[in-house]
Length: 248
DNA sequence: GGTTATGTTATTTC
DNA sequence: AGAAATAACATAAC
Image 1 (cartoon, rainbow, N blue to C red):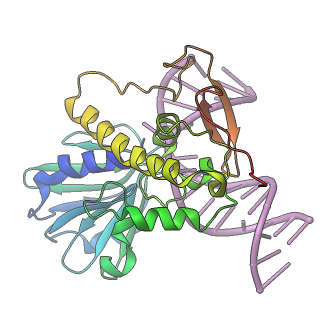
Image 2: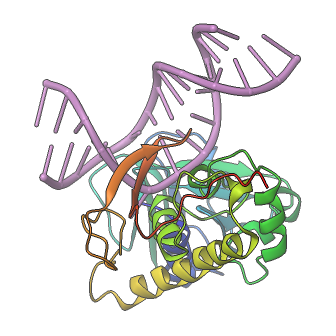
């Protein structure tokens, strides 16, 4: 379920529980010592990439929804409860996700500037980090959370299309201006995605991801599992450029 | 029943 | 030792 925008959306929705005390904490299968949570006041909720961070005075619970994770606010779903928090004004339930306790200060754990949806996202650092791995395929690099936290397979495909870059390009071969456009596209699309979620009128309309036809020239899109990550890439061979080495 | 899917990490293998 | 491949996990839809 999760790419960065959905986690930001979840953070905003769960904001109603900030400054509330956990009355009961429960879990079907404990990976964390839930007994330490009861009675604790939820001080803040943050997000980093695809991770949700529930901040308590002495520790933070990091929730990662992984592939199949779901959550419910003031409701429940019939599946394995990873973490259920009951507050005075409602409850927050996480299913089939990974939870861990972080004892360290978050600023020591996270480099916030890598998160494309963070207000202090560092564009230049992202560019430099990308360029530092010139051999990597761009379709893999975009999914690397240590380069661009929050970008998932959907945003990856949309950003590559928008920047007109073929997913199989090596990072090092992509012209600087185009690589910068690509990073910008990741940020813009992430916020568009968030806006879609907030408007909750229609489901997200992807332009190429999970689509059959290129919206620009109406040719059939190609769908292939590419790179080391072997994740589905949807792309238009005509619109998205595959650069070739220049031996001049 | 098999495959696929918005993800990541641990383990095994070379 | 270290990189690379593979397995693992949890769930629904087609």
